[in-house]
Image (tube, rainbow, N blue to C red; front, side, top):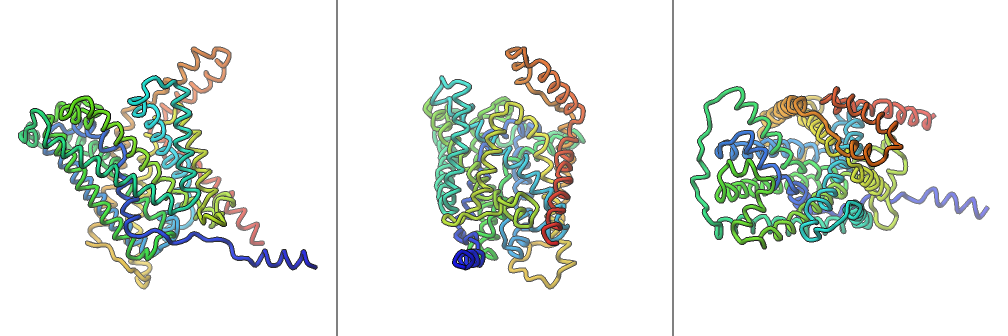
Length: 492
């Protein structure tokens, strides 16, 4: 009897839930700290190579910022109306049904966010940390990448407040560092010239110019990516109907301002043809202004930037998989909330494990480039959801309404379609290459049969090209119906 009573009490005990602890400054930190990663340091080369003229370079960053802002204000209406953990997943579920929402979360977990973390971990250990430790072995860099991910898993596992505090600190450091780079450039740069802002002048309009501008715009939007992640943490945000839209607004505007100032600084020091050839333009600027010591400062700043961008993924993305699991559309354990730390701890750990596997794979970064643009399909659908919901649910409480409706969400939806098409054309022209496979074939001859099969698979991938993105998304369909069947069986 005593055991039965105990079991009954344990069954009646309420399950732990996520706690609302994030305020306005935390949302701003998530946006600014997550968006400013390595993009502003790496994409200027590609943008300059696509459009050449400084005025067009500024135009790309301005248009990219405006489109990101239009997306931010559109998503904010949905976030204020549905202040639940999961963000975009919840909005897609409410408007289009559970299949589309699941495919978004599936792609986010399988490739987009786990791939972003893997890419950042490899960049941290292989590209920038060797500036301070130049003799790291290949296995040493892999171990550091593993520890990098494990550290962020632990921080976010033990509390959303811990993850937010780390994010806020890293945001202050990277924001201050980027502003310092700009200030140093304008004050100490040798040979700085404002004529670099306008020379050479843009060419006459042509279809090739439009194509180049489109390709450059895709690169800038990669640098702007991350503002949407704040919506995933709506379930842990205090007064989400106010703090979520305001945090996304302010954070996005700060990023736009910083990016424009950074590009002014780059162009003040060097003409656009130098930027086209430089893989590390910020490092070149610092070298010009204060010598080799500047390269060390830049390397340190970008290490903090990379850490902040990866931490944002752990702070926000597990809430999407948590929401999917609560709906019965993912592994049940992922819906668990830690009884003490009140975090979706299993979701965080699973994301960390998958990210580590991807970071240890030498073949992932190229595949990631094929799939990342697929996210814009879901962005466009979310922007359209604002309009659809206004028509279908005019009575829905909307603590915040999109500024400039319906023009701003329509522009965002059309731009999402444009970006998808431009990225598709660009990917068709770029074959996928896996140098690690050839190296393995030379060094491990007894695995020739396996390597040969892998090579055939890679040739197939090269043949499919940009179809990889929709294929990876569609692979989720049978998994969706599997979990839907389990929901029906459990309800019988």
